[in-house]
Length: 80
Image (cartoon, rainbow, N blue to C red; front, top):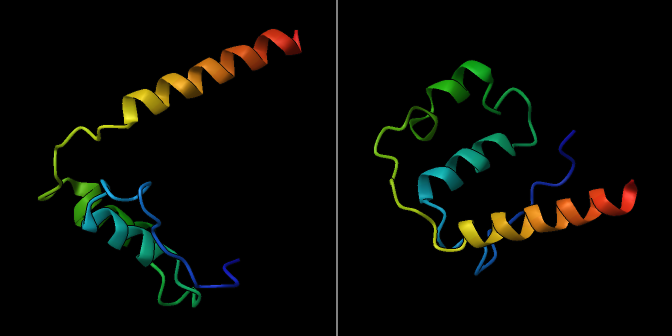
């Protein structure tokens, strides 16, 4: 349940995320379920369909994935 509709897209984490992607997130984080996107509307959203979706590699994504995988592998070693 969405209780609080106050959210933002803090810099620098969201700087490279497209306005269309942010629009999709805003459309999903609506307090009133009747006004929120349903599954069918979600699948028709331009960002999901790839309509005019920027095809730009986000500069920090590769490094963040590497860091995530390193932490995940380290965690697995210590859990065994």
